[in-house]
Amino acid sequence: MILSSFFFAFNNILWKWVVADYLPLQVIVKRSMLTCLIGFSVFVVYPESFTIYTSLNEMLFVNLTCIIGAMGLVFMIYALKESTLNNFIHYSLVGSMGTASYLYFVENIIPQNFVLGILFVALGFCVFLWNQRINSIAIRFSSHRYLLLMTFCFSVSGIMQWYNLKTYNVVFLAIHQEVEVMVIAGFIMYYLKQPALPFFKWDYILLMAPVVVIAVIAGMYGLEKTNPFITSIISLTTPILTMVLAVLILKEHFKWYYVSSMALVVLGAWMLS
Image (tube, rainbow, N blue to C red):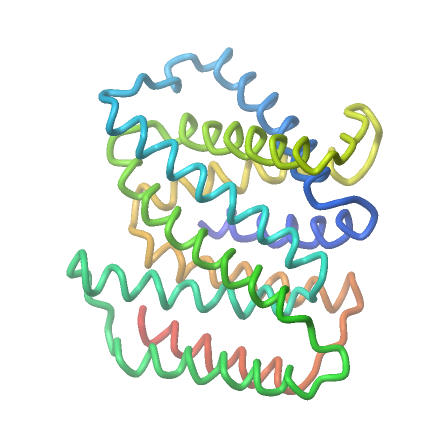
């Protein structure tokens, strides 16, 4: 999970760089084509990782999981196009609160200090949004909408993948996810009549593909061995690493309320763990 968090943090920085030059859907389609190519190469080398569906219901459930995850990625890229990584980070942290609540009420996996943890996460998020309200570079409502939809999709797909991992191979699900991303993003891009990027042109997308493959497969292995809440808690290192990299590499401004709101959210997540 730590390996996955590091590579996802690096991937977040690459996303922010790339979407500054290209349309979000163009980036998603080219990246997913590359990751699918890597994935199919894995199937050739390790054919035992390919899994056959055991029933129609499970086929539908796996595909629905991947569709929701793919939509989460689309919303994420549109959000990063219009906002800073700090906005992305706080919404990602709130996703851990939603996952904890699901496991508490549905699966009877009871985190410690549930009520206090939820309150601290909510308070930290409110502090962040309140200060964004008066910030001269406050993001638009549409960006908050994209971030909220991203958080919901990623949280739901994470829980659904946890169920899928009880039956299916990690690599199979990871590659399946990337195929769904390519199909959905490609369809939307075709519908919007956006041109595709040259496949062999050198850009940061070529670097993103292996980074994403490592991050996704490592994260799937971690999810298989634990549960969605533990995974989301460990994944808190991703937004923290992303924030550090954003300040160091992207030169994003670091304001006092970033620190205070982040501290409250992380404290709440620590209580829930």
